[in-house]
Image (cartoon, rainbow, N blue to C red; front, side):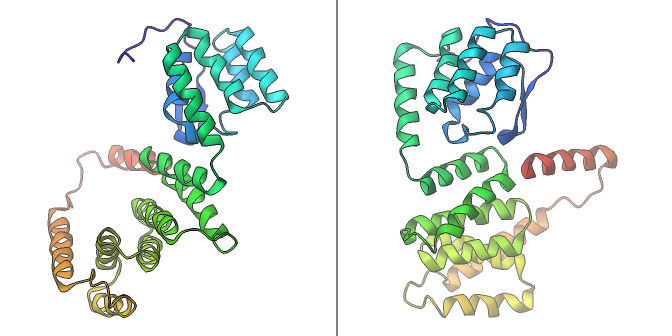
Length: 266
């Protein structure tokens, strides 16, 4: 596919807001791009009558809007709602359409917990951490009812911890990394757990908290003294390199932080 596309349909004066990625779109090409690259995010937040009205009124594509409305009315497959959008402007080649349809079908047949995991991962990649956390926690809440593999559940806890750390929810992030390590001890999980401890716990409590976790994992040895020293060095470098200067335009800086926070939390 080309890096640039000529818009074949007028741009809407009023954009459509894609909730899952907190982004406004103005053209059908932008809608196609989102659908093509975000299969796990094609849900009720995009498959709704607000979108079909925007397609009709904003883009002037009445016939396409009717086709999408009919798919919604009969609760058809996701492909019946999405594929006409691509065909309207020939966004994908025949081969690409077939490949996308196959990926969409394969995703729809996955168990719910796998679809939620993929959705959470996609949201993390897009910086939508609060929404990602909701997807991961749905899996965690169901873990008592379903016998998930420890490797899978540890991955969910780990990714949830990453998202929580991004939101500066340090205690929650530490809990996520610790649960990931308890379920499936690996060097990756050990390093994340150690660094979360160093960031979250006061200096006097760090060794105590580390020893408590070590007591459960004497056999694997991942939480070694070597990793401890590496962690303290990395955290120390980060602290020394932190920019503590006051920006010249403090108001503008705070507004930028607010936008980033709103985007991350939805």
